[in-house]
Image (cartoon, rainbow, N blue to C red; front, side):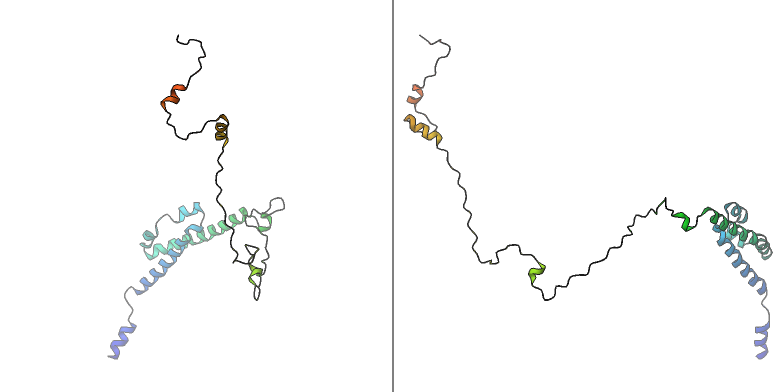
Length: 191
């Protein structure tokens, strides 16, 4: 039984070293593929001409060749990107000059917050103002009388002066209608 255990522990697995080497190479290749966006665009076309899945399908020897060939190129390209970025950008103290003030929409004025008033042990009149100056609410409010429309007696006084009574009815008797004569303005009275 002891010998079986020793044989099981110490005999190498067939292809174990090759599999372990392949896994480590795959990790290196995937890491280099993650740096794809940090490389110059013209280098990106040359270096990453295949997709990651098709690259991982290669053999160990092909992966080693690809890593040894393109890792220094990737590092150099990343350095060039940093250098170009530094050339194009200004330092922060040159960005805001006296001629060009900072374009900030936020107001930089600091307002001192006033301390809240303490209203403890104060009467309410210190806090709230009175609506009515007369303090007593038991006073009777004056009654507002309705304004009646005054009748204009001008027409009725004129009738009284003439000696006639003003009738409110619109119906006229036949005698009153017959008495009314309209003056002839044109002189063509019937004869």
